[in-house]
Length: 366
Image (cartoon, rainbow, N blue to C red; front, side, top):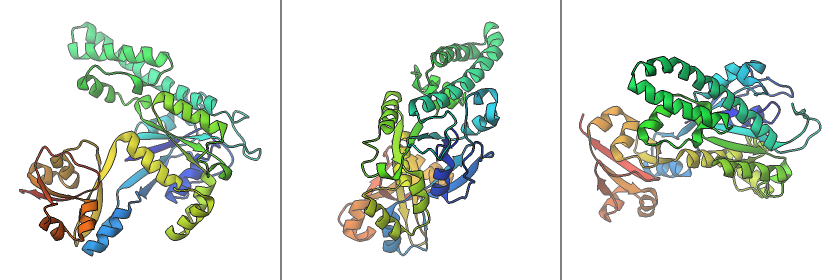
């Protein structure tokens, strides 16, 4: 999974990226301190992996990972090249979802490019730049396909028809992701356009430390972001980028104590992962053995052969069956063999839909 972190300059975007990835992207109190996208790979915290590693005496533990891309601050006119915007917009096309950092704190020492804190205005600024960029893409495709469509190319005629509907939607100020496709083929066509506003969005409401304990409930700026997220069907979580930066320097034990002292249950990274998995419809299944314990990220609804294909294409091609036990049942029994003796290990075929926390042994022909 690849997430692009965007936002106006000085909203805490690079500070959040630094704390999430410990990759050391430059953070400074002026626009465009991140000119090239910085990339960091982060392990998805999963307590189940340690338990399985101990149970199987695994030589290695491999968590699922998220790749974060820190994309430089956008400004008004980015879709027309302002602030090196075109370069930054191109990087957004490569991600699975967008994490839009929105400033929800007041601090006279940190400059805001618009002169005041206004989440609704800031969200609209970014949204419009992405919409303008998509309009440019759509109009160029319409112009390119119109002649061929007029000459009788039915495939391009359908494409142009869909593009014109998308153009109307974008001109109305709405993102491409709200377009209701007639069927799977039409949705696949829309996906092939790689539009920026087709990307799912998670808003990161960046607050002061004092707003963390009640998860931003008393912060009117956070209320605004939550309202907009609900209206658009987007995800949202509350984070304090400065606190995340402090947490990044602590051990897991000290981190937990720090959060407990603040009355906070989860770190920003944990909130973001939950929001990302929920928004993208993802989950994890697990494999365990003496060699390795590992988490594999798949889409909800994935069937067993396709899940096996995440490990290796040969597993999917030669799939015979999957021996599966739920993580909770496995731990309760104490071992795979004990779970098998109690009849809790199931033999599932090609139509089995994988469940989060399935511990799996795939059988296949080479």
